[in-house]
Length: 234
Image (cartoon, rainbow, N blue to C red):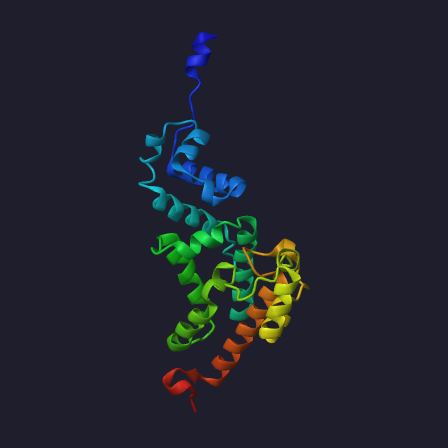
């Protein structure tokens, strides 16, 4: 029996195992509570063992983003650029819904890893393969912004919590002073279960904005738009 116990070997620690465990911890407890010490405990190792695979917390977060981006379905079965882009973006959104913490981490990253660059390159390639000029594609990517990753940065937080949390007198004052803002912000016809982060970024709103953008890109492409004076090429 002792001999058998001696042959039992612990699963070797690897960068992939470290990153996967970090993603699971962030899913369970939130990325704010993630620490190298807590991650080491989860893996059954001393904290110093982690530094052989990730240099610090920032590199850990970079790697976690790589894991998330790697989960996005890269298959683009659409027959044209528009359906292919739409499919890829909505696939990214499904991953962000699965890992709500990833939005804040993606926004905080300043370095672009090879995994992230490959994703961006593939997205750009969809427009270029669709016949978009480099000029138009440049502006398209700016317009896509965070939507490329499956989320948007919302103006209003109309998740429905305001009426319970804000005193009626304050709401009345706000409505008198900023009537147009309040009539929009107080709308409650959203699916709170599908929100990515804060605000009204539900599935309907996300697809509504995405389709507006794609329709606009298509119109500009067909018109031969150029950024030179923002005109249409004749």
